[in-house]
Amino acid sequence: MKNPQAGGKKWRLAAALTLLLLAGYSGAAWPAEMIWAPPALEQLIDEALENNQSLRSRAAQVKSLENRTRAAGALPDPKLGFAVQSLPTDSFAFDQEPMTQKQIFLEQTVPWLSKLDLRSETTAQSAREKEAGLAAARLELARDVADAWYELGYVAESQRINDALIELLERIRRDAESGYAVGEGLQQDIFQAEVELSRRKDEAVRLESRRSTIEDRLHELTNRQARKSIDPPSDLPEPDFSFSAEALAERALARNPDLKGLQAAIKGAAAETRLAKKDYYPDFNIRLTYGQRDEDRTGRDLPDFFSAAVAMDIPLWHKSKQSRTVAAATENQRSARNRYNDLKTRLPYSISSLAAEIKDSRRRYQLYKNELIPQAGQWARSALDAYEVDRVAFDTMIEARIRVLKYRREASRLFYNIYQKRAELEVWTGGAAQTEQQETLHEFKGQSHDDP
Image (cartoon, rainbow, N blue to C red; front, top):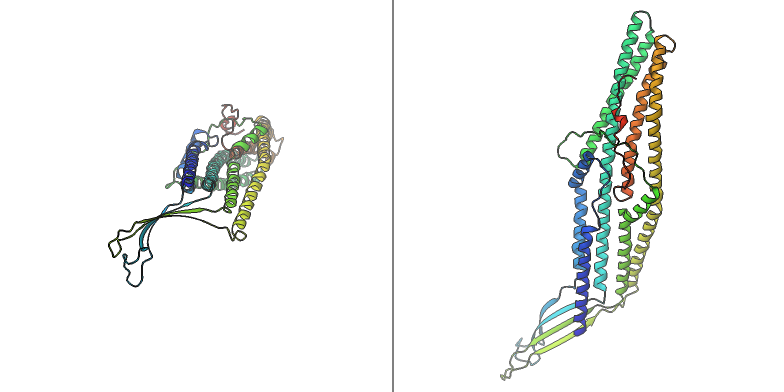
């Protein structure tokens, strides 16, 4: 009787230590570090994280597993029972036979050494895997909000550029009509201007529809009950942040939540395998019984009885039960390790690819901003001067003036695409990447959309 009690104390102590570790883990292992975001975007992300029902469901699952961890490390409930022994069936009298007893017994199942610890560890690792999934889902939601918000910025900029194109084409059409009225222009110039103007108006309808769709997407992500106006990005810093792909890959290997979730899955499967192997060893059932006897018919006071028993499981059918369970747990462990190795191998390449895309987009953006847009502006002014003295055709002049605004739109697309790729990159690295960000305002955003 002494050894099982001492063993029980040991297991309860181990379970308590496990719970303390879990309590510390739950509060500090997964800091709520989201992607880099300016204040307006940060507010949208916070709103989405607060209102998202799927995240609440995942958080509830984590809490559920934490509670199950406490239960898994506890001993099974003891059993309290009542019985009657050796009651004669001819009279059903308790004082007829000396062996007749009214019994009360207490029974406790005591698992084999370390089984409780392994059950607790298996559940704890499942909780960590779920919590890693929650962290990944939070990052992905933040990325989706950022992606839609930056896309809204590009569409809003495209609308401003398209409105400037419409205003430009209306002036060109009026100039063509005036020239044709005094015999200094061609009617086909008017038709060409009207065709281009109609195309821009069609683009305006398309952009308005696209903006409405993006705003609906943001309302969906933030789970808003009522529609509210969403301001597009403005005055974002120049996307000249720099970082090392190797440093980001190292950070991702240490912080990526999907990778951490698979690490927890491996540890959980390993604990499950060890637990399955422990099932080859028996659990013990300890039973204590107190039997009360009545006086016999002669008035003799009969002493009560005390009994104790120990029973154990016999793994007689281990080939069809325990061995199968061990094989299944081993395969789960192998599967988790293969998935972990696959992601660990792919992660640096994914980060390197995104870093290369950001670098290329930055170079193209600088090319548009510093060379193509100024050069196109010079061409447009030169073409206008040449057209006024009949040295270039009307379609050349109009194409040159439209080209400037088209280049501005392409530069805007590259600008916001860099920020979208950065948000995607930070999902892989498990949070906001440490980069050098200059606070220079976006010069392109401040450029005038007047006639070049």
